[in-house]
Each structure stands twice: as structure tokens, then as C-alpha cells.
Length: 297
Ligand SMILES: C[S@@+](CC[C@H](N)C(=O)[O-])C[C@H]1O[C@@H](n2cnc3c(N)ncnc32)[C@H](O)[C@@H]1O
Image (cartoon, rainbow, N blue to C red; front, top):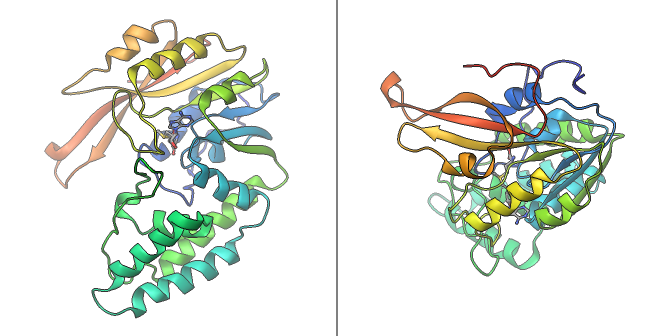
């Protein structure tokens, strides 16, 4: 039986954005998972955390190689960061962004970016994540956050600050009373801690691309090592991976994941207003235990 009492009908959107965020795929992922819920939900590539937060298990081990994501979420978990500290920070820093005068917004963004790269303040990380270009998380070789400003007048307007604050509060409510642990580390360390009752959800970077997520390159060799280690896990697992679009097929699935059970879902990326501009991608979920329900079209 699934540990989820019912399918998630309204996906909770977390306060952190990142490339490859699975918000639209959460219902598909969670509906595909069979797990007793007895052990821990283990997520070694946490990113925005959208899958964990919607699964909302009682026990979890969440990790990522990016220390800033972990520091922010750990801070919310321990109540060191709350909806009101977030509101205060974004209102104050948002006002400074505005007050520096028309056209000068950009310079205050870069001042915060410089400060963050020296101190690593989690609230500055949230400020940058919610005002940078496309909500991207990208670091240079020295570990410095290097995403440019997303030009928008009055970036931290009242409604926007309220939306972020509500996301933080909702997340604190989800975490309340849960036995969750956040750790900053490489995926191998987290996988090595798995036990038979756990469930592992894997969402690694796209194979073969320099992602810049946190000073890391996700190489083919590492992707293959993940497939090997996933196969040896003592517990159930699911891995998200793009399967194909109209130009390309992901050969890595046939080459390294042929042992897994596959479920697929069509996903549309809207690039424009017309039907022709919709770009379709087939997303796969690879599971190490057969799923009782059949693959939808
Ligand atoms: C595709 S994103 C995860 C997206 C997430 N599932 C979501 O919906 O927001 C991949 C994540 O893996 C992390 N990552 C990259 N290399 C890693 C490594 N060697 N060990 C652990 N995490 C790593 C990145 O920092 C990034 O947050």
C-alpha cells in the first residue's frame, strides 16, 4: 500500500527555485511510488525540496552538495529562520533595492551577491534566489554565486514578499513534529546510509552537461556509478530522468537503467502562446520495484 493516503491534489511550491525543479511532476512521481512509510524518505539531490515537501513523510534524510540550500532548510526546520525573519529581511533589502533609485536596482543586487559570497547568509541566499535570472542556482569554480539580476521594477513588491513568506510558513507547518535530518554532502555518503525500510528518491543533474549547481560537473561516469549503486540499494527507490524530446533520446536509460521498471509522462514546456510553440518532453520515472499500475500515455 502507498504511504500517501491520497494523491496530492494541490502541489505545495517551495520558497527556493532551481533549474530542473519537479513541481509539475510531483503528482506523477508520488502516485507512482509504493512504500510502507516505515523507514525514512531519503533524498540525496534535494534541490528545491519540492518532492520531499509534498511527500511529507514522518522521517526523512535530505541532502544536497549545495550548502546554502541545506543551511536555509535546516534553519527553517530548527526555527532559526521563520516566516517573520524572512519577511523582515526581504522587506528591508527589497526597500534598499528600490531606494537606490531608478536603474540602480541592479547595483544593490550585486552588493548583496558580493556580501553573500563572503558570509553565506541563508537569508541573502533566499533574496538572491528570488530576484536572480530565472530563479537559477549557479556557482563559479571558486564557489561564488554568479547568477545575474532579473530586471523587474519593484522586485520585492508587497505581494511577492507575502507569497515567499507564506511559502516559508507553510513549509514550517509541514516540517512541524517531523523527524527530518538535513545534511550537506555528496550523494554517495547519503546512499551508503540507506536501510531496508527506507525509500530513496533520486533526481540527479542532467547527464553530460555542466550544470554549475555547486561547483560540480555531472559526468557520464558519475551517472553510471549512480545507476550501479542504485541497483544495489537495500530498499525501494525511484529516479527521475528525461527520456526523450522530438530531437533526442536519452541513451543513458537504455544503457544503464534497463534493469529498472519505467513509467513515463509527457511534459509540456510552454515557450509561447501558440500550440506549435509547445515543446514536449517525455519524463521517465525509473523504479527498482514493479509498479502495480500501468504506464499512462
Ligand atoms: C535536478 S536538481 C534536483 C531538483 C529537485 N528534485 C527539485 O525538484 O527541485 C539536482 C540537485 O543535485 C545537487 N547535486 C549536484 N551534484 C551533486 C552531488 N555530487 N551530490 C549531491 N548533490 C548534488 C545539485 O546541487 C541540485 O540541487
